Image 1: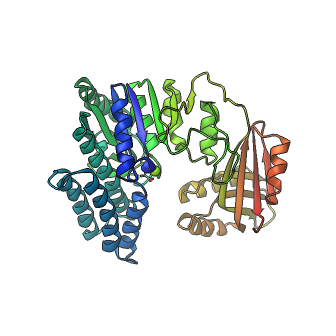
Image 2: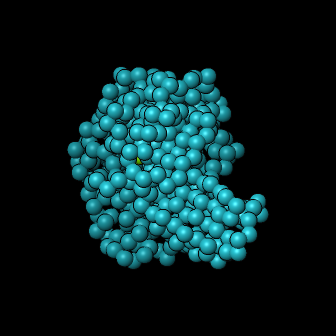
Image 3: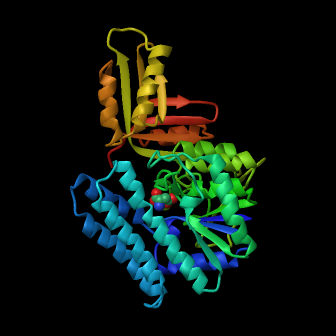
Length: 421
Ligand code: ASP
Ligand code: MG
């Protein structure tokens, strides 16, 4: 059993879908295929949710743009009489209904609407595969992936998920059909739709692989594999042939966007290898991440995070920020849902670097100010170098003014004000 995952870029237009169909039909079965929403659909549907919830935009015309994008692709792939048009249309109607109802919460509305991107994409691709002669069973991930009702960041309910995935997917594979389902989405015990966090389709592929004891997972990307830097920022980025699970989880944790950070744990726990390959050059070897593999070539990897804020939290009366204070502070960060990218403490202050999140940060700063002196700098960049050496650090130091530096045995992190260019 293999699991393939195709992200938005791999299904962004009619030609891309044809390419995916070619890769799937050439694969050895049994095969489970996980697909996310097409192109920039998730961003488009997020805009629909925001306009609908905050009543600050025209959700109808925003939705029409998303529908038109899909309609154009459908017309290129199918005859007008194909029943895929009705199936897709029924999903758009669900969005219109969701917008009419009084929402329970922002997160609830978000998940009911944004998930439609994946449901539509998989409906189109399953129909296309079947039309091309690759027998495919469309499966609703909301019956496979059980979650709690923590909307937008739903947590997996593992025992039920293991059970459902085995019960539903095994018979499909026994019929020699490709099992095709949505990434990123799940369902609650009350049958509401949830999402697992942006870019969460990789995680879905890993969950399914874990539950089925798959032989491997392949994530198909628009790059040749895992690179040691984002080619958008580093012109001399190099491909890594193989990576240890440890390096992979650290790189994704620090912000490498090539794989969703939650993907590695389920795979590591079962020793399932993860291949990252190019859907443009499917015959290429890509990168393999797996058990007993050492990172090769063993070169420094760079992660670049812009839009960072450094918050310095100090006691108001010169008292130490000791263990009790830190425990209180971590509680405030957890409650606000703000992830700490780097932290450092001294006698009377605690500094943290976080993403500049317009939603979560103002509330956190308010709650901090109640008990502490709070200063912050924004417009910063956080560089992380895994397997650094002095040369790599010196090179980065030319890119701006250093604010804070931290090194462990394997990882160096630099917070900098970027040079104006
Ligand atoms: N479509 C979702 C997103 O864009 C999930 C994914 O792409 O993995 O975040
Ligand atoms: Mg995506």
